[in-house]
Length: 248
Image 1 (cartoon, rainbow, N blue to C red):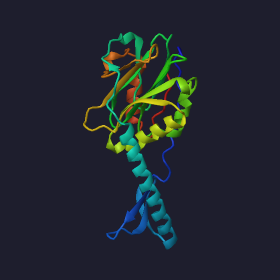
Image 2: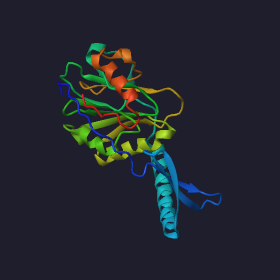
Image 3: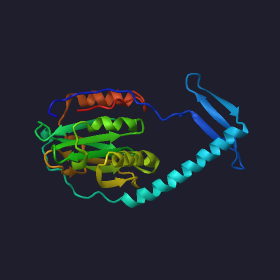
């Protein structure tokens, strides 16, 4: 894709985000606590035996799922491989911000796309060797994972590889949601340097001409896009859960 396009969309949070299940000292569920965002108040509701039993079952399912996910994480996680130091011209590279994604073709004026400052966010880079196109996405906690298939328009799953970089312990669930998404789409995960320790934010760029990835990247490695400053300011004040997911 050579032309810049923008697509704004609403992000839907995971269900029941305002519900906190409260345990007493004996690890038995005693109430559910609901935060009313509009009234800025908290109400407690006593749970009956049926609700308690249902919740215990859900907790057991959750724990089993988490154990399986942790095993999968350990089996795929490895240091980022195959990345080079930045050697491209900033005039042929375009950046995306948190909550945005970009698609570029090999014949684009700016075939390199990248992002920086991902912590605890996750960077997903894709390269389709058949169609010679690349994608970079800066995924944060507000991203609706179910919207990710929309980013794959034009990509050939069997010819596409993925590079995942970033995330920390707080974003383990989000990182594994993206892993599950890629597996469902039958996209090979070539790099999964995720759920990282330390405080160094991740950065990554990818070249649509050959699939080469680059790190570390800085803002100054990319074209001085006039809209970048405005987008950054808008997203900084717009709230954690309402940033648009943008296609370039």
